Length: 120
Image (cartoon, rainbow, N blue to C red; front, side, top):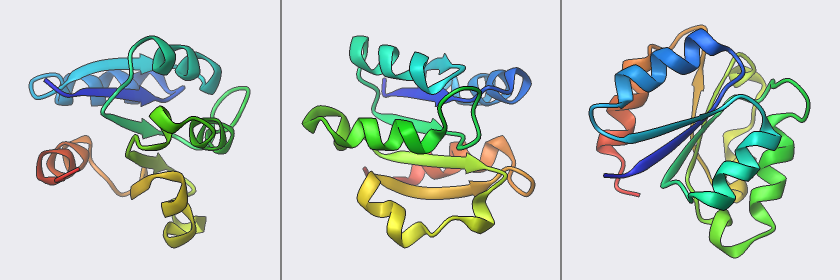
């Protein structure tokens, strides 16, 4: 079963995403970028769902950190953020970002559908 790390400081959203994805994927949740680094080091995920606005370090910090190591730079990243309309998807591809979802418009099932269809 593929592993998904959800990096989200909103507990309700994180748990809702985890509940919806749990039937198809092994799920871990990190509430901050710093916690995510530790979890990635101990258990390399197949995908990361990342919020950009996090308590402490931002999601951009995590993207930069992941790119510095060969094993983590290949992890596909799905951004789920209220800043989606302000992000340039093309420039984020070099950080492993494969999809950007706008939190205000998406449903957690949209992410499930994307992950099931992704041939990554």
